[in-house]
Length: 189
Image 1 (cartoon, rainbow, N blue to C red):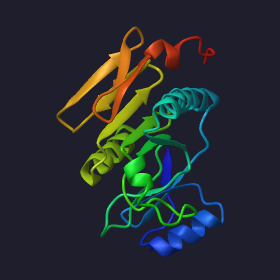
Image 2 (cartoon, helix red, strand yellow):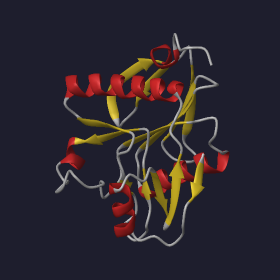
Image 3 (cartoon, helix red, strand yellow):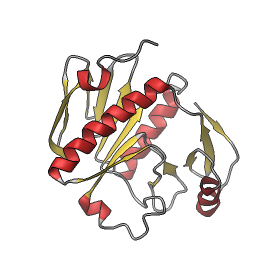
């Protein structure tokens, strides 16, 4: 769940607030503060990050980034999104001039693990922003349903369930994992 903190914030003001410890996103100039996530959310995001990190270390395709990494998605818009997990290809990593700042562009893959407190509109807004900005693939992870919906566009998507295998498509060639690796043996809610 996010709450609008104040309106009409510049990118510079957002960077300052983030440096002071603000936790959230900037969406079209509005600060959206987010609450800390649950343990279950953290376990699922951690498993996904671990699976991707292991694959990327073996294949040297880029880096996995975890929550709190900001991406300025649009050139002329004050929007900085913070996916739970992201993948940046070597090509995009080579463009970075200052690793102490937010990335000025999009990840190749953005992963959002849905929290019970997030509304449909919040999730849809993130998805639409990622795809409109040019993110090649978005994974929307629904812990209660034990599913992952893979979006290549708003009209090209597929949902995978607990007994199926997730793959990286054209973004992460040869990446595969059973959804049991993500959802198996989770603590009871």
